[in-house]
Image: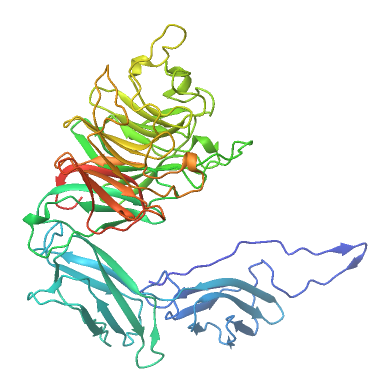
Length: 576
């Protein structure tokens, strides 16, 4: 059954009269049905797409008759009543049908170039893991005439055929009977996104044209279940690693990153892992998600007199990267209301703005527009002036640099500039201000410049990355976690690793530096993205981890990405 696409709506052919003198209408391009036509791809295959390889059937549906002329817009014409035509190049063409003595009709026709699609067609187990699961890949290419094509496959390191032989490339052809040579079932020896690329030459016996390259990322998990670390690559996508004990895997196995296929955004300062729970009459459905906090391009002070320069947003990505949806957007709102840091209590996502306060939304929120009003309490969970710390440590304009909620539901709120340090409070402390009201807890690391921090409650440690200024040196600090009545002093650390980070922007007071840290509960390692300053000689840009036993910072798997937000899914899984 053919699919016909008829374009156009009835418009009016207007006759202009002046006094009693009439003017004959021009026989031009007008909107009546006196001259009209439809077009469709010939044949059932690829019937909805207009490709350079497609034979297109044009059908004259004009109400009036006469000698016809078709102009296909590519320099060719036809006088057939209902011609077919094939375009040699992709592009936008104007197709015109003219009926002598009646008029003409023109429609635009967009012709697409063909490109191969490479995909996983089958796998021997629901989850692809290293070495054991066989994967079959297939090619899809619009080729209705079954012209011979040449395909060159390139495989990542560690790829093997069904008989266990290493394969790096494979050259195959498509044939006149429609079959395509295939390398067969494959296994992969390394964890992560295993990128298989495909080069294609179309019609090797004719035009022999090189088409656009194609690729597929085969997501290969670990053969041992392990937590998953996610990170936001600046200028790229969300990526992930399996935090697996490599000593328990076959010798030579590599742990490579997964490309989740979801954009990190402009300035992804924080990632928050959370399990969203939906209760039904019969069950509780759990969905693991990564919340991507992107504060946008304008993440430092700007003059936003009209309150319209906001460009931040929070995106919710499913843990396997199969979906991504908007949670809340501040695009077109007040610039200082963009989302910066966040945390969760399992029910809400709490997130800060630039320097006023903290908002919260249920984890299930989707497609919201930011409703808070900067420099007021409207829409906020808490603002600076609602805590007893205001004017006793926190001043107006204190820049937010971190947020954490512990198992006792105590919030830890990092501040830099006009309120240096980490401030603790409970929900019950909000609104208790004024003369005679004491601050809820001693200020932690007062007069330092914390840029990112996290807590290991099991080990009783506080980890902070600081910059210069009121701090003698920039770097990573390991401190004992202070109790409710105590604090932590800069000089009283368990370890301090000096490492100078690049602020990424030129506004030093609001440089992003190291924006987030996360603890792996299984190993107690602390992971963070480090962006080395030009003068830093010991540590290079990439994903790092701190070992509290050795008190040293290490590179992770040779990673060199520029990274901001990081989070961990603590569930031990083979893939995600």
